Image 1 (cartoon, one colour):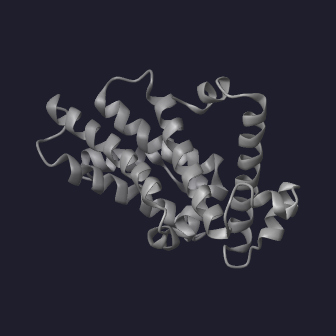
Image 2 (cartoon, helix red, strand yellow):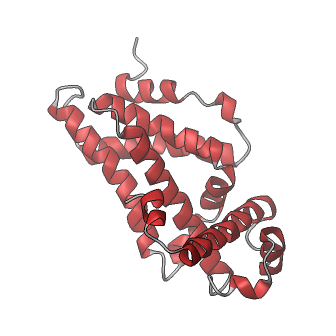
Length: 205
């Protein structure tokens, strides 16, 4: 069930609470991306979101909890974005290509969230409540594994290990994202089709 269908079943008060929570998360992600997690205070977040600081505690226990929620928002939004993109595509190779392109398209539209994820991944790894977020990361990886296996079953890829294939492609994508995050590349320098072609066909002419 996507966010829109969930919202249709909620009361007005519940929808208002979801909107308030999302506004706080978006403000926090922007500040974490611009100032850094350690330099951002809850007072900063409250001011940008235009809420009293006490309101933040209605939704989040502390700044770490807010960071975890920003991670969760980013990964959940990415998955919803992918599901929407894949609805009309059935060919396994086309789906693999679309998954790769969609990750970059999502990054382009959600730079703050992706910068926060890349810069603070170590905090997520050490957070006691991060299991559900990691499960969502795993869901994203599992989607790619399934398509790799489907492509092999259809004779579109040479026989191999679908999990390793997915890992290779993921490394290529995340390597580019890390360069973006570090400021060593710009978004217009990224060529998703070239990345996926290199993976699928290699560099041999």
